[in-house]
Length: 297
Ligand code: MLT
Ligand code: MN
Image (cartoon, rainbow, N blue to C red; front, top):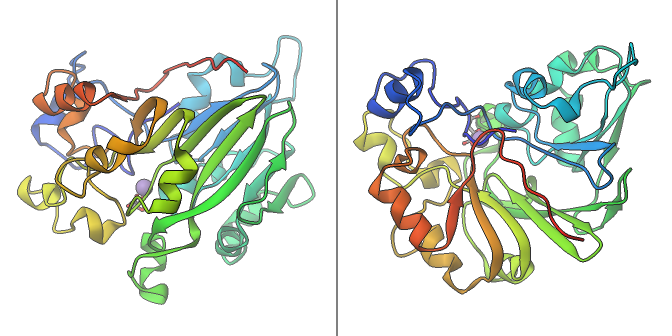
């Protein structure tokens, strides 16, 4: 549904070249909403991964997520899966408050962040079932697919930094999702600070990989005048460089690899950039809003 990092493309307060192009409707630098995926194993029941603040727009733009003809109060959205508690992962939950039943799946840690924020009580607990999911334990979802959450290196959500610090860790705060249906395997990892050997092993051979494409280079925010933070400080590995994502995944086979969670400063968001040509040459694609993919079982 969406392919951008927090803030989207264009970001509201950015007047740099890429955002200007997206704002002007340049077809080679398309606007992007914040990262989110909708998937279905049976074509009827849908599971969302990620609930960004752009979710209402994404649902409007995705006909499979609309009430079926003749239904006055219904939604094909059966479940929402969260990968962390950053605003760009949970903000859209507030737009699902119209007393529609669905399952909300996340680690105990992410649920604790929601539980501690009274505003999320607008999701009435008698209609929205909050389901804590243990790491590394597959959970079967309506429609026949299973999901498994696994820890990836990351940092606590931006809004929890004062309380929890900024050190990278690998725990329930930042997770990836492995979806299985029949023999098909899809992995969705919008934020990742490092590709560890165990993560590389887990991802080897997946049919479809959606991976953190936040920044092209670690210093990109500073060099472009967008801010002071490095990618590492934000808990995101960068695409380029010796320890970057492109190099790190060289030895990890996957049938199709797509970059998601693209920051508005990342030159790969433009179809005509040399950086885009570079990622394509290395076997990656850049996801775009509205992209649809079918996986054989
Ligand atoms: C991130 O991915 O670094 C966060 O989403 C930042 C934020 O909350 O804006
Ligand atoms: Mn983010």
